[in-house]
Amino acid sequence: MRELTPAALVRLASVALERIAFLMAEPADHLTGNGPMPHLAPPLPPATRFARIEYRGPERGEVILAASDGCARSVAAGLLGTDSESVDPATVGQDALRELANIIAGSLICELGGERCPFSIGLPSACGADALPANPTAVATLDVEGERLEVHWTRIAVAQAA
Amino acid sequence: MKCNVLVVDDSPVLRGAIVKVAKLAGVPEDRIHTAGNGQEALDVLDRTWIDLVLLDINMPVMDGEEFARQVRKNPALADLKIVVVSTEANDERLKRLRELGVVETLRKPFQPEDLCHLITKLLGVSPSCAS
Image (tube, rainbow over all chains, first blue to last red; front, side, top):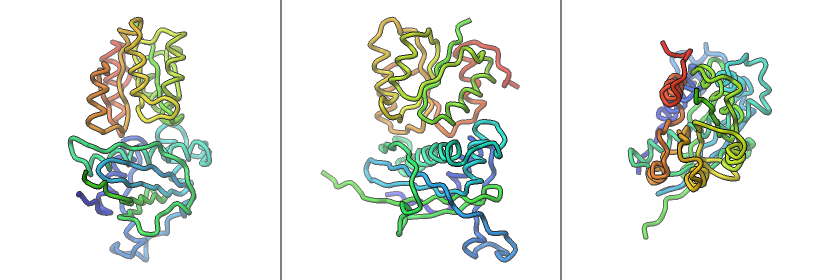
């Protein structure tokens, strides 16, 4: 069974953000004190938008994204080619975050399943902060051009062999 | 010129993004149609001639696989080209989709240029995104 590290989650999310929304992202190491000069980095805005998606196959799991309003706005604006200030984070921004969850989960199951991927993903949905898992398998926090994006991956269950 | 395109995706934002790429590929705006799921897409096909469908797979109400199955049951739609634009990665499902006549698969996250070139290749329109 393959494992995914926080660095792998950062890579998957960064590729998705760059391709679909032309956004640059980097690991937010300063939040965890792992960066070179954590005291110099400004704190990222808090997460206010959440999206969740499940996958199934040889194992079952979920991906939850937690993003600041500004991140959700920027993703939507990048997708649509509009100004982020014109994006309503509660509607268009939330929809963009759901789609980002869909895309990151799609990439994640390819990492887990390899070339002949046996996994399928469900439909992404909006959720609240209460959906964040207490014990995720891996978490990554990204600095998306000064905005927050967290990727929470949880392996829920492994299918039993017949 | 055959260039009526139907964009099928349950995400309004993604639909908007794909419509934008289709316009960059040279498809006139009034030739681009949209639907939020497979059933809505079948309704569009009932009333409009479509040459190319850009199809998401995981959607509520009717998913992309069932849509493709319904299309292949209709001889009047035999010439319809279907391109899957989706996060779908399941090997078995992708095989079924190819058996249903899907001509290309573009995995999200895709480069807009890749979708643009795919549209121009399949429709023969003049792209504004080509370098």
